[in-house]
Length: 140
Figure 1 (cartoon, one colour):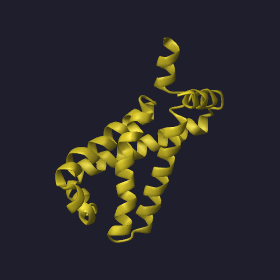
Figure 2 (cartoon, one colour; figure 1 turned 135 degrees about the vertical axis):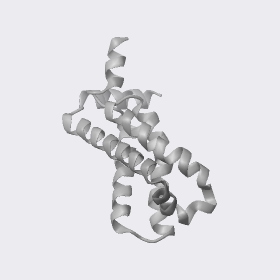
Figure 3 (cartoon, rainbow, N blue to C red; figure 1 turned 90 degrees about the vertical axis):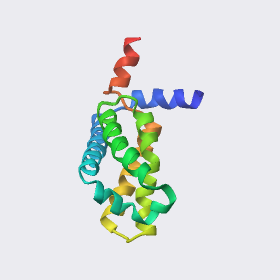
Figure 4 (cartoon, rainbow, N blue to C red; figure 1 turned 120 degrees about the vertical axis):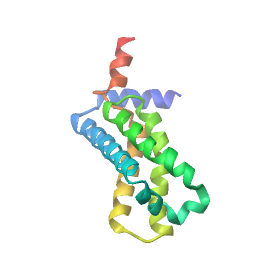
């Protein structure tokens, strides 16, 4: 627990606007992906065809698109950022895995890896200085 507190202190002291912009870009990307998947469910099912026997259709429809949609919204504003990213990690790991199990699409693999790495960074770093989390913490 002390390690997390020291990391939070370091993050609050060394927070910069580019990092906040990166968090906002991550949130917008995930939000857009959620909206895109909600409007194109057959495409979502087609993408996850290689691993469908492992997880099934119900999980795809009821978890992936809404998690991207809501998680992206929360990440943009920096509200419950770590929890939103924890919800994204299985989806992003699955997105990377799909490229190795199914047809390799280099563009999708690079995008999935980049989003996964940025998500892991914000899982450790937190929501940053210019976020709703920080504002609410300062109000207490």
